[in-house]
Image (cartoon, rainbow, N blue to C red; front, side, top):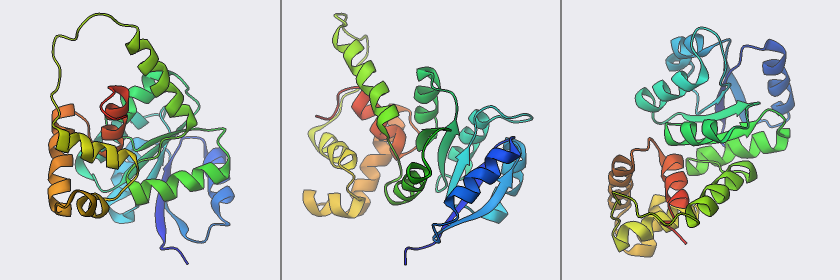
Length: 217
C-alpha cells in the first residue's frame, strides 16, 4: 500500500470542497486533514494539520489563494500547493507557477487527474499537465518569433543545464547525482542556486522557467 498523503483543501464553496473530498475517497492513501473557507483560515491551521499537499482555490474572501500560496512557499517550503481553479488565463498560470505553486489544475479536472497530480507533486515536487504545457508551448512559439536580443541573459553552465535537463526528465536528486557522478547534496545545491538566480520558489518554478526560456531541449 502506498504511503499516506495528507491533503488540505481551501475553497470558499463548501459543496465543491465536499465534492472533491468525496471523489478522492476511494484512494485510501489520500487523507484530508484540513478544510478551509479562505486563505487566512488555511494558514491559521496549516501548521497543526501538517499536510503534504494543499489544493488551493484562487479567489477566496479574507485572504485569496495567491497570497496564501506565496506565504506557504516562503514559510512552509516542504508543503506542495496545487492550484485548483476555474481560471484559465495564462497570466494566472505564469504568476502562480513562478511564485510558489507546484501545479495548476482546472476545476473541471477528472478525479483521476487530481489524484495523479497529488501523487506526482509529492514524488517529484511539481505537476505539469497538458493545460500548462500548452501555455509553455505558446510562450515558446511567441518567443521564437522575437528578433530583439534580451538586455540581460542569465548564464547557465553545462553542468547546471544537465541538472535542469534531468530534473525535467523527472529524476530525483539521488538519481541525478548517480548519473552525473556527483553527490545528491551537490545536486540540491545546484538546484537552490538556480532557483535563486531565476527568482523562482521551488522545483516546479524551476522546471517552468527552464522550459519557458529554452534552457533544456
